[in-house]
Each structure stands twice: as C-alpha cells, then as structure tokens.
Image (cartoon, rainbow, N blue to C red; front, side, top):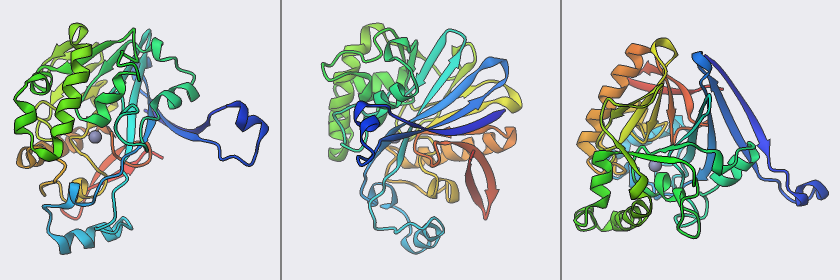
Length: 307
Ligand SMILES: [Zn+2]
C-alpha cells in the first residue's frame, strides 16, 4: 500500500494574472492498492456545527480533558472536514458519497471544483455509492437544476437506508432538528430513484468493494471494504464520525447519531474488526484528508492520518 498526498491549485484566469487574490486550493490524498486499485480523497469543504450536535450527551469534565489533547474548546463550533472518496480501477471511476451541493451550508459544496482541479469530468464518474442519506453525503448528487450531476453514473444505496428516507413517515418520526434532512433526502432520492441500484449487507457492490451494514448514525448506514486482506481499506462514512471523541471514547453516545446506542455498538464492532485485520480506513469527517490508520491507546483508539 502506497500513500501520497499533494495540494492542487485551481488554474483560473484570475489566479494566473493576479498574485494578490487568494487562490483556492484542494488537498488530495492518494492510496494505491494491489491489483491496480487507486483511491483518492477530495475535499467538499467543511461543515459548521454547534458543539452540542456531537458533545451534547457526553460527560463534560472528561470531555474537556480529552479535547484539550486536540487543542479543541468543548464549547466552540465544530468545523469537520468532508472527504469524498474516489476509487479508480480500470474503467471504473466510483465516488463514495456526493457531498453537500449548494443547498446545505456555504462552507461545503466544493466537490465539483475539487474534481475539476484533479482533472476529472463529472460525466466520467461511473458509480456514486452512498454511505447514507444525510445532506453532506447525498445532496451534492443533484445540480442546481435538480438533475443528476453525475449524469452517466449508476447511483447505489443500501436498501434499508433508501426505504427509510423514502418513507413518508420519516419526516414525522425523525425529530424537529432533522426534519429538513428527511424532506431534502426524499426530494433528491425521488429524482434518482428510477435508476437507483439497491444493495444489502455483505453484498459486493463492485468487484473489489463489499458493503457492510453499520447502523446507528442512520438506520441503514453502510461502510465499504475495498480490496482484500492486509491491503484492504474501509470507507467508514460516518460510522466513526470524528477523529477525536469517536476514537478516544467510542462507547460514549454522540448527539450526531440518530440511534446513539446502536451507533456506539457499531463503533465497538468496527474498531475490533479494523485493529484485528490491521486495515487502513477512510473517514468522511476525519482530519488530514481522511485516510489513515487506527492504533489502540488509553482504553480507546487514535486516528493517525496517512501523511
Ligand atoms: Zn456526515
């Protein structure tokens, strides 16, 4: 497994003629697996969330002690990065999640620019494989005209997750805080539904990619294992949703998970699997481009970004 990281700069006319304007940059992290599978992550930007969205249910004193190790203030807004995974293998160019698009928060929705900077045309994407239906993962699948941005791609989602967001009852049961998530997901999935390929736990969604049900963050959340054995890497989505508390205290319930108890049980299962198999991981909201390794420490775990 060979990991490299480089920064990309958009080449716009303005950037070429002016050195006074700030230039927008994207960081791209690459991972080379056996068998010609190449993985890179692209930044969609970062979310801005109130601290309690994650930390609300957690014991405040111990939380502050752990966050101090990360130079984080427990009451300051959170600004998690959003890493989109792109897998290239032969003629396959598969995206894992589609980012936020322009309809969610102003600090996200950069994926089209990041793809352009990497020299990739959205029309060349062959598959868009969703971990779950939250706005920062799904809403970027449509363009500003409510049509599929990745117009030539096969869109794929776990059956349980798809059924949950398509259910008219979800907007009533999900709670006021996330009601807009339900409305937004259903509207977008209805556009994509006719051609959506639905899959189940344990199925191979592509020849090198196995789906793994990882519920709790959402009811049908899926992670994906790419490759085999010591060379495998797991696309975590939001099943391990941050690089600090979710690693240090995976057993603590998080306000960001729709079923917090189930999500904590899923994290326990995943950490056992990842450390037993010594897998690399890619996290949607993990730092440093999201690709890295997991080590055990202090009764919990540490995320070590690849570079
Ligand atoms: Zn997310």
